[in-house]
Image (cartoon, rainbow, N blue to C red):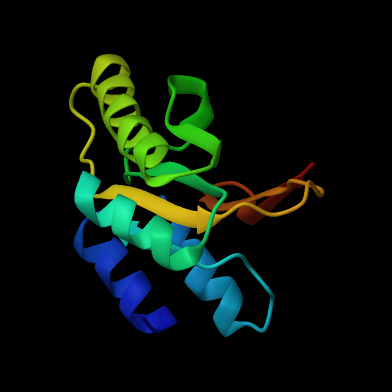
Length: 138
C-alpha cells in the first residue's frame, strides 16, 4: 500500500494512530529495512502464514485503538509451531477484548522473530502552540 493510501485511509477513519503494518509499509517505502509483517484475520490464516514465514514467529494485535500492545497481552513471541500460533491467536484476542472491549480488531500481524536489537518509538503530533512536534525514544 502506498503512503498516500495509508494516510488517506487513516484520515477517512479519523485515526491519529497508524497500525504497525501501516507504519512498516511507510518505513519500507522510505528505504528503511523492517521485518515483514503479514495480517491474519483468522486463526487459520495466522497458522498458515506462520508456516509460510518460517518459525519462530511473533504475533501482535493489529488495532487502530491499541497503541501499547504488550501492556494488554497483545503480543506473543517465539512461537515455534502452528499449534502454538493458534493458541496464541486466541489468547491475544481474548486479552485485548478483556482490556479494551470496544477496540476495533483488524487481526494479528504474523512476523518472523529477529535477533534482539534496539527498540525505538517514533511519534508526531501537531501542537496548537508549538506546531509540528516529533517524539523519538528508546
